[in-house]
Amino acid sequence: MKFVDEFRDADLGRVLAAQIVATVEPGRHYKVMEVCGGHTHTIYKYGVDDLLPTNVELVHGPGCPVCVIPMGRVDDAISVARRPEVIFTCFGDMLRVPGSNGTLLEAKAEGADVRMVYSPLDALRIARQNPGRDVVFFAIGFETTAPSTALTLMRARAEGIANFFCFCNHVTIVPPLRALLESPDLRLDGFIGPGHVSTVVGARPFEFIPKDYGKPVVISGFEPLDVLQSVYMVLCQLAQGRCEVENQYTRVVPYDGNPRALQALSEVFELRPHFEWRGLGFISQSGLRLSSAYGAFDAELRYTVPGIRVADPKACQCGEVLKGVIKPWECKVFGTACTPERPIGTCMVSSEGACAAYYNYGRFARERQVV
Amino acid sequence: MSQAREAACDRDRGCITCSDEGVLLRVVGSGIDGLTVCADAEGRLAEVNVDLIDGVAEGDVLLVHAGVALVRVGGPEKSLA
Image 1 (cartoon, rainbow over the protein chains, first blue to last red):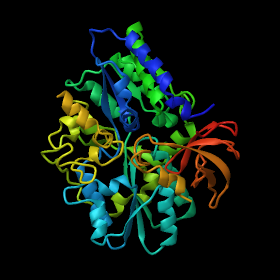
Image 2: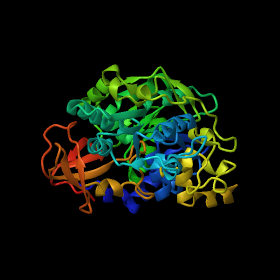
Image 3: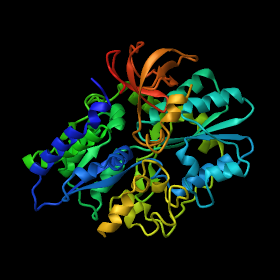
Image 4: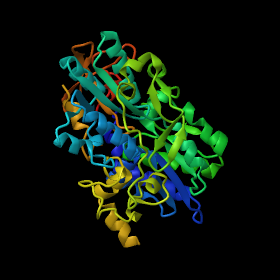
């Protein structure tokens, strides 16, 4: 069995597209949200939406962690990074996310010791190599990324490394989904669930969506045929009057997730009472912080940070994009003042942000012709 | 040792930071500091923490995110392509 090529087969894609056309009711408009930024990226890279009937609309959800980071957290990160004793490490995308007074990349240009890493383990290695400096890792991501941070902190504690700290911005996927489902300005028919988050948490945490809100969920892989088949499975549930959590990505996702990863998360992290999400505001118990057992590694306890809530730029409509209320091209600054080279909003920074996906694959040109 | 992970951070293949991005790597041997050396489909190497998975063996295909293997998706018979 192959994992990639077979899931990019154009002929199979056309078969699935025909099945979708045969499944939908012509007079009904369907709105299906893909939760994950990885799915958004696939949809516009491969033109999955071009294969769908016009009455099936894909709505892009808040599943890109870079896109949901509020400006105030970026300001906090920069304030830590500017400290002379600090080596500040983070993933590449975060370097270009604007705060209220610049980006981490600009702070680096001005002299801050900011370094890009590909894993928290790389940051821990830097800490071992620089015992006289504080090494801070900007932890970000959903449950897919959090185990990596957790294992790194467990290793740091086991090795007795005292100069490694974590600025924790990990978030969880279920609370924002519940917030979206409670939102009065968004009517959704179903969800394409996040595949790799589910390798950790499993499918069970999404059962509240059909149970409490009557919407189908299909956990999906990331190749174009995965996404197309998942759309078909959502539409089949709707056509048959079913409403449940289905797993399209069975070749990777176990229904119960990874218990060892969940154990690591529960040991290292605890839920914050609330956490701010760009565009969605404060959501209860949606963010993680280090547990008291790991408090010695918590950058927010070691340093004083501004902690000020910063409003988004007025021209930026990332919040509405993240809620799926508007399409990226409907934002006033999309593709003009806001581009991947000079982003105003976070959705244009990350390659999996909806705005960047639209922009990078030329979707704005076609959409503007439609308007 | 970060070649494979580096390759995952571009416009076409997505960024390692983002939500759900993961890459399939094959186990090729032992590394330093208790890590495991894995290779992507093009043979680029990366050091991976496999603490979350039982019984990882050479030839296994793993889904890796941010330097950590989250799930074993197959053995030597599985293709990365």
